[in-house]
Image (cartoon, rainbow, N blue to C red):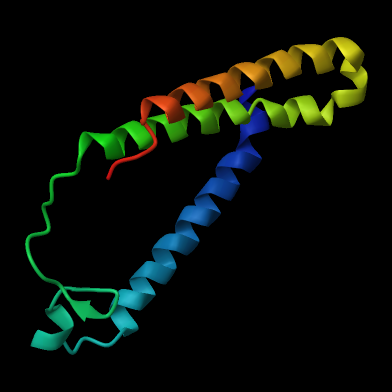
Length: 119
């Protein structure tokens, strides 16, 4: 049956969840519990925090983040191509070169439009 093939995976998942729960419980039960005002005080990089935790970011930050995400996801397509590079031959090289040129043109367009700067 097909369901029998999943038994080892489910067992491994159970062992992993069990270890995670066990060590979390041990940390809660055996860990130190001396809370002081200094320990409860928020800090950032070892310094006391200043100002509000809610800060409005410029929309330019999100534009850069979105451009990075798009290019990052598209670059992932290079890995399978690199693994099978010799099997694809010249045709695969030409197709991936066209894809790369389109990526570079998109990056140049974003750069010229100022989408990569959020001064």
